[in-house]
Image: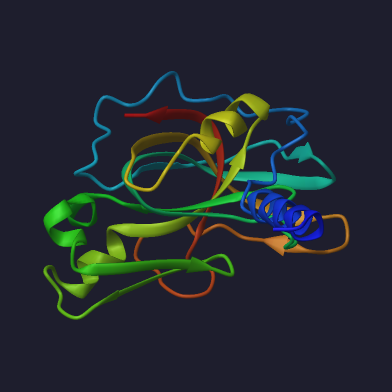
Length: 208
């Protein structure tokens, strides 16, 4: 291989590596909501996420975004898929999506019949047969847009891989950009389609 082709090969490999790295976070919240004091004793991969609606909460500011916490949130789940983003409107705030499963969608004997895909900030699944009712699939899995509260949380999220069992705690949030752009979180596990993803401001991470 001549020198020209060697240089081109090295540059191509470098670009592929860079493209697949998460965007990272270079900001901290100016004011952060109080994080839960550890994970709830009732939290389990066999249970639905724990959620408590907030009646009143201050609006937060980060990186030119206005953030409104809507509910306290904790989940223990299996990572069904991970997708990192660099160039969409949301990437500066949320460089990583995780497709998560709990209850029946965390069990290997159920998951072996599923194909999981993520793109365009959506999570999609496909199966030739339903080992559990379709309703259980929809209520026991979700795509979550992760917003790290600071660089240390961002570093923890970077370590999460498909197949891991993770615990995440923080707040479901709505986001407004300075140019009128809006991002709204789901507040229920039973919805599907556009708008069904959770936007999660992550204050705690545990990989189990």
